[in-house]
Amino acid sequence: MSDLGSDYDEEEQGPYLGEYEGERNEKEERHGKGKATLPNGDMYDGIYEHGKRHGQGLYKFKNGARYIGEYKYNKKHGQGTFIYPDGSKYEGNWVDDQRHGYGVYTYPNGDTYEGEWQSHLRHGQGVYTYKDTGTKYVGTWVSGKRDGAGELIHANHRYQGGWIADQPQGKGKYVFDIGCEQHGQYIPVEMPQGGEDDAEEAQTIVVPKWRAGEISAISQYNPAEDGNVGQDVDIELESGDTAEGLGEDEEMQQEGSGDAVPGEGGAEGQDGEAAPAAEGETEATAGEGEENQEGGEDAGDGGEEQTAASPTAEDAEEAD
Image (cartoon, rainbow, N blue to C red; front, top):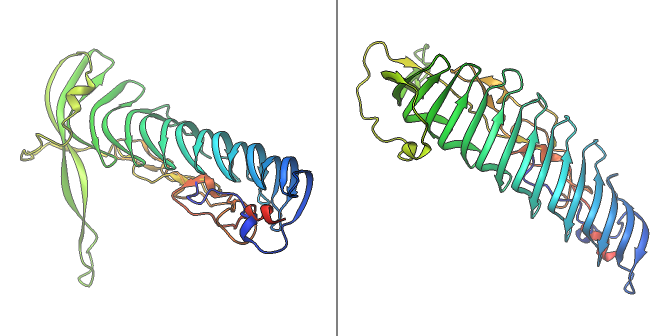
């Protein structure tokens, strides 16, 4: 997805505003139903108000991306669907040109995220589903990463516990379908990486290690018990502790790019699960354009973190 998910700003693009066919007001501003072909080749078909896209409309990017939904003063605002060149799709709420509120994002590899968004990032309560395995993460997200109480649900077992910065940490338990559960906690441990060559400086990465505890009959899960995430982990590791990666660690794909998402269907976590796709991390932006100055809306909403590659061109309509 793109952080610059706005349409072509016709008000700032110079004298040539492209072709327009439709209704105007007494000031000759685009006002009412109309169709516009922008200087960069993008097209808009929908409602205008005082020269700005305002209301229901369809915006088509020359790279194949398109947005169908509501606009408010040239920005995506309200309910809308954005389809990216790579086949990924977001259906849900927009605020000030960003995914914000409730929405469903379908990634190129078939993974899905359904839940709350804030400023283009997964934020709040949501469910991430891996298409290939059917595994689901159900829980809390903060700024695009799993953080807080959550469950990682597999075919025949599940992990329930706390997460910090996209990794399991603190007290939790594994619940098995055979009728038992193992309590324990994840402890962050620094592991050396690289540095085989004397000329290279060794680096360390933090890996969550599972310290197993008692096994008991299944009890009811209470997310409130995982509220103090990260506490009670001041324990020395003993031999036999195992590293569990459970990791979804990639940022969200950017909206309009077309690259497959490495996380949500790409990068594998140590628990055998692919890391969630970073919305916008690998998706190339299509260039929807309100903020770009080459003429066109940024089709790059398919990657949450990436910026749009193409310029935009629609606010200049007011001057037309």
